[in-house]
Each structure stands twice: as structure tokens, then as C-alpha cells.
Image (cartoon, rainbow, N blue to C red; front, side, top):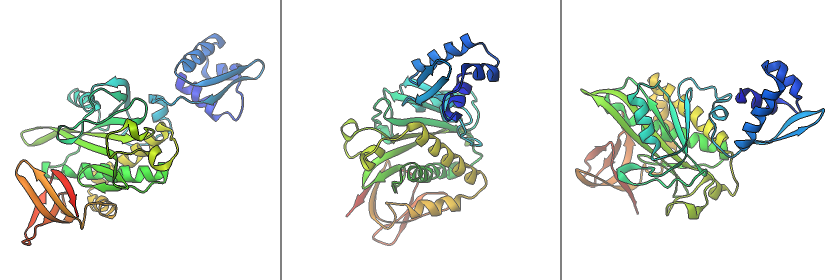
Length: 318
């Protein structure tokens, strides 16, 4: 009901009378007044003038499920959005939902995380109400060797959404970082549940710094606000990200990873650079020359041998 009232207020160019809202929703004027009070308690600034009605002045800087899904228009990712105030980690929440057989594309987001995490056991700094911290569950029918495609898809989607929402042209550092002028703007984490080599579901987690100041973030990190000098409506940024993710996921399901790979290469901050990659097997140093058909990074060592890497900690060398 509150979602419908907010939509009425947003669509009205001026005031909308309580009588009109009552007629549309078939509820009493007293019920309308109660809903208006609840919306105000959530942070909406709504004025009421006798004989004119109600008018929406400002919306809260708060993630609300019905604001996120309003006119979202996605097919899979974001059809169901669960909003939490504070969680330990959205990855944990999404993994639990995946175990409970939630639908493909279910999203869980939070205003803050007490122990947000990144790759290789690192933490993700999550200042309250200043970023987008969310994870989503996917159930793709992909072999294990093609799962790196999902991380690359998410990176391309973030690049596209960031430019759409802010005009900033970011870059992708393999395998999962989004950079702006060599400062970390966003990160991606992918985990999976598999049984007998069959993927049950994949959880993709994303942290995007939106309105945080530099002193609220980890060293060498930045935000859309810090990079552009202006604040952003986080709901609008979130909708842009979800739409781009949904488009990318559809491409993977339709076996169009080549299009994603082309976009990834165009925005890469890694290809044609000298790199060192460290993983449990050791370190490899050489030139990052290309991606293979599954999304793994190909590194040409100094002896000419090309090594395939699907994960690892990467350092760009001079």
C-alpha cells in the first residue's frame, strides 16, 4: 500500500488530495493518514495542506525494497530484492537463501555490514548508508570451468552502470576490481555451492563505494562522490547496476560470452601489462596477453610459455 501511495505522490506534479488517494486505493482517509505517518518515519518528507492534499518533497537516502524494484524492468536479477539494515555479510545472507532454494536472481542488500568480506579473506569496508553492499544468487547451467564468466560479466556490468549513473569511465583490474584512476571503486566476490561437480548455485557479491568520503574508506579506495565531486541517489545507482547485471546474465545464458569478453578487454587495466600473479601453486610473472574462451587470464612468461590463470592475487608491475 505504501508503495502505491509513493507512486501516486511521485507521479503528481503538485498536490494530490486525500480524497483522490482514498478513491484510487479504496481505503479510508484515516488509513491514508496512518500510511503517511509511516512513510514520514522512514524518511520521506511529505507536506500536507488543507484543501490541497499531500505533496512529496524529498525521498530518504535509504535503500527500500519498493523503491529499488519500482520500474526496474529486469527479467531475473532483482525480481526479488531483500533489504536488511545491518548484516554480518550479504554473502552469508545470500548463501543461506541459496540453500533455501530461493529463485534465480534473488538479491539481498544491506545498509551496512559488520564483517563485509572480499577475496582471499580480506575485509570490505562498509560505511553505513554510503555504498551499495549486496549479493545475488544465480542458478546458471554452466560447467565449473565456465564459472569465471560470471565474475567478468559482473565487472562489465559495473563499468556500464557506473558510466550510466555518474559519467565516470572506470577500468577493470583482473579478476574482480573496478578502478578509477588506479583507486579501487568496487569489488566483486564469487562463491559457489556444488555437489558431484554439479553447480547448485553461485553467489556473487558486490561492494560499490557511492557517497563515502575517502577517509571513510580503505587506503587506495575511492567512491563515486570522491571521484566526481557530487553525491548520488543510491537507489538510482543500484537500479542501473541491477539492469546491467540482468542484461549481462541474459547474455551468458544465451551463450553470448564473446560479447562480454570484448567489452571486458576494452575496459581492462590488466591486459598488455606486466603482472605477477600469486596463488597457492606459487607465483607467475609475465605479460597479461588475453582471456581464453572461459574467461581465464593468459599470461606469457619471459620464456614464451603461456600460463592460464582462473584466480589469484595480481600485481601490476612497471
